[in-house]
Amino acid sequence: QVQLMESGGGSVQAGDSLSLSCVVSGGTFSSYAMGWFRQAPGKEREFVAAVSRSGRVTDYADSVKGRFTTSRDNAKNTVYLQMNSPKPEDTAVYSCAADLRYYSTTNDPNRYDYWGQGTQVTVSS
Image 1 (cartoon, rainbow, N blue to C red):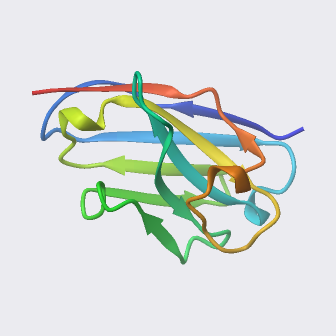
Image 2: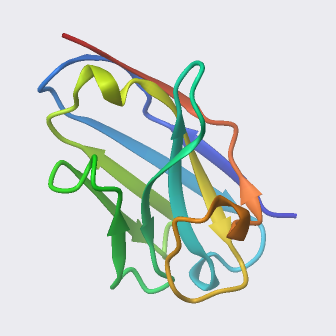
């Protein structure tokens, strides 16, 4: 059974930085493409970022491109989301997800097989 656990959420001021981590247990982490999604109250879940199995390929939503960076450490079974210059509109519950079947990154939540519980990020102005 694959389990994902996010950490690092909290409350920050706009313009500060925040780093999220997601530790994956079970299976072979290096064979999973990983994604980050977020959901704000009353809104649909939306794609934030994704990273390929090797970490060489990344993809970002236009709303976070240039501000957020995702990376992974396969030796630590961990994927990261570095959030620089966050804005109040980035406030949401952030979840990581594992795609066990495909090598490439995807922004389609239906492609992901396992999900973490999520961590709250609140950005105040």
